Image 1: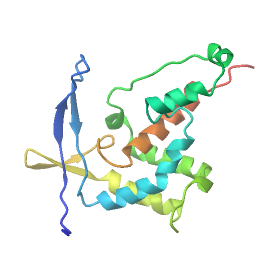
Image 2 (image 1 turned 90 degrees about the vertical axis):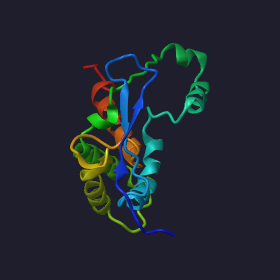
Image 3 (image 1 turned 180 degrees about the vertical axis):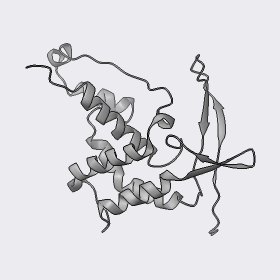
Image 4 (image 1 turned 30 degrees about the horizontal axis):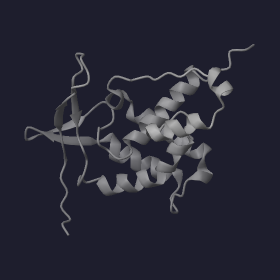
Length: 177
């Protein structure tokens, strides 16, 4: 077994399903990076939080299961919509996303097992590993200054919780006085 690590390598992918100026997606998977195993562990701890985000859909099957749990009359009163955030991961502020996920973890502490770590330890691990995201492109080493890496294990959790927080602040508001 090799104990050598490598920095994430940037790969450019053309988005064939998008016809906008944002057709290029940069992927920087962190497999075998110095922090890969730490991020896998943190992701394992935080992943149960995904099930607690009411608007999060795992896949189409999950959506259909949720729809089936409603009566036709219930469905008539509902409004369904989808949203796409352009360059979601790279537009998320890493530190505020970490704060949001740690706040959500604190609210749902009984739903996760930290294996003896404190939530502050998890926060420190996330800040250390995601705050300094280096990658290689064209044999040059770069520091990603903004956003989350595409391909980093906890990125979907941080993005989902960040979007849930924005949803709660903007959509899930009782406007009755």
